[in-house]
Amino acid sequence: MSEPIRNKKADFPVAPTPQNTPATNAPISSHAQQPGVASITEENLDPAAAAASLFAKNPALISMIQGRLGSLVGRSSGYIESLPLPVRRRVAGLKGIQKEHAKLEAEFQEEVLQLEKKYFQKFTPLYERRSTIVNGASEPTEAEIEAGKDEEEDQEEKEEETKPETDAAEETKTTGVPEFWLSAMKNQISLAEMITDRDEEALEHLTDIRMEYLDRPGFRLIFEFSENEFFTNKTISKTYFYQDESGYGGDFIYDHAEGDKIDWKDDKDLTVRVESKKQRNRSTKQTRVVKVTVPTESFFNFFSPPKPPVEDDETVASDIEERLELDYQLGEDIKEKLIPRAIDWFTGEALQFEELGEELDEGDFDGEEDDEDDDDDDDDMDDRRSDDGEEESDEDDDGTSKPKKEAAECKTS
Image (cartoon, rainbow, N blue to C red; front, top):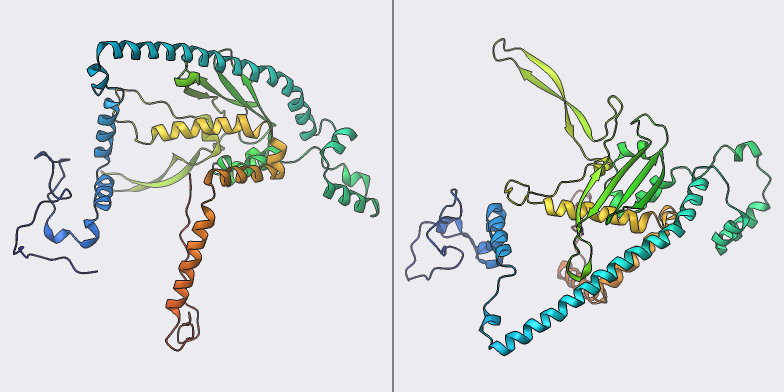
């Protein structure tokens, strides 16, 4: 990479570029400075890189652009108004037909909701039966056991029958399925990312997760806990509300969520941590150590959902919409995935279906990418070979291995 030219005037006229020539004389911000030649390198000449750098340094610019674009949404380009009157009348008629279609879509979504509620009533006894077995209140019937077995379990059971009988008292020590819901949640990727080591001890007391529909559009998630040392709540619920009016296509529109207040026992609040800080008295110059509580990551923050921003509030954090979307998606995952198929998440079998769905979404492009990667690897190996045909060693003169650079992980949200 060549060094930037410093303090040297061009011998020929240079046309201004979009990167260093503003569209107007007004600065982007009060801290904006005109770039000098000495600050420009070849790496910064890429328009995309320059734009990315500009946006990264000016988050206010991104907000301004988004606001401008938002104000343009729905505005007419003038094309429809320029059409002849007979054509405009036909367009109006088509829009009238579309409105009738929208009414039917809203009716369809409403009937789907009623159908979900109907079958939820049929699912409920199964959920209740599951809870009694998980918490040791009853044992599964022989019919239930046979229906849930697979070939491998049958073989294992036959092998155990040939082993010496164990002490009956030893078998009765464990009742139900210990840590059933904690294990199921830790296998559900979106939930596992929220659970900290400190949370696990409290979530071991989770005995059931239920849901119920509201009289208005929305649903409630109910987490039941046994007696524990962290809080006094027997149940902690979170309610998701939809707007009364349907959206485009008749879909329900998420409005907001509300969570129960957790009654933490003394010094057991998992959503905060205690830090010690020194304070100095200005008069006496003496210092003292004080303890302050600061928010920290915890699954139980799930019950304190973010609040939608006020339209006129420009001071709201830029990621509030993303946080709202994530919070709603977590609720949907619990409602649509975790509760109906809790046993599959406990055993991990549900992960196979999740991975299969991701592969189907990605399409058949993986094979091509792998071939390209293999070609690149071959080229790298050729480059590393010395002139005499031997591979270069990754060891220093003293025989110790050099540290190899690890490939950067590609994380998806």
